[in-house]
Length: 371
Image 1 (cartoon, rainbow, N blue to C red):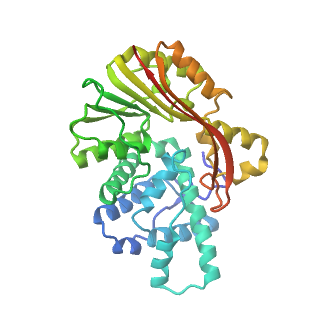
Image 2: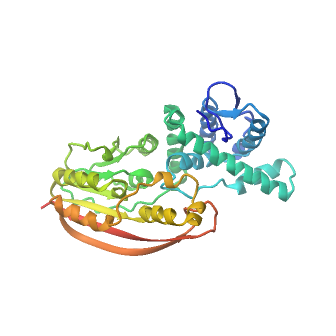
């Protein structure tokens, strides 16, 4: 069923095509034919799954949206993937109008006021398309959409070295040769794969999101990494791997679990670590603070990027304190602990660039060892 207020529809009949302008003038200037091809391919696949209402408003939306396609740049694929799949990791994503406008003005004259209005309309429609795809499980989970966006993301990082998140190498050599496990790897997996030496033990990266698994797997193949494995695994489901590990990393993962599930995970980690193995945790209660602030401050909530709150999990107030208690209860010994309060003054969560939303939150770094 489609929202009557939406600019896009996903029903199979009675819709106007998503794509009508296939010139892609902006892509013709690209230095990466492979990325340019993938941009075309992903919008052709979306064209088979979504379109515009057959109405005057639908035709106008179609015209404006195809301006995005006509003047698109290769990173348009990255922007779309960020908005659909990883808004929780990359909340501040906007179309790059310096690219679009340079391509547009190079083809035709447009006065500044009209250009500003067109930019606003293009941004709104592009963001609404991403939201439509995210909410339509048959499109968001479509194997071809996932593959095209995942492989395109990996290809972009492979060609540019522009990592979405830089993940520093850990002291993983001291594992007695046992595998290293990274939980809910996310976008940080790209830099981990890139920097993982052949001399290190096996690295197992896990994530439950097919887009992430597809992208990391393709990136691993592009680099020819033989001591890295990428696995589709959902640690929030209560079922865990049977392998034994010398090191387990949980970087900003445990705040996605309610306490009963976190305790279950910690007991599993204690059981699967080899003697002397270590569990490393980096986490914050930032998302809890955002949810609480939004609940009590309508003005703050109104400024957040649309849909961002839907990506957050509400946890308990004493998350950081409870985390330490639950680690001890699991049988692991806490050997390292760092606790800090931060003031994050950023516009990363704001739908209005430059409009800073200050948030206070607690961050912890914990190392626990199996004796």
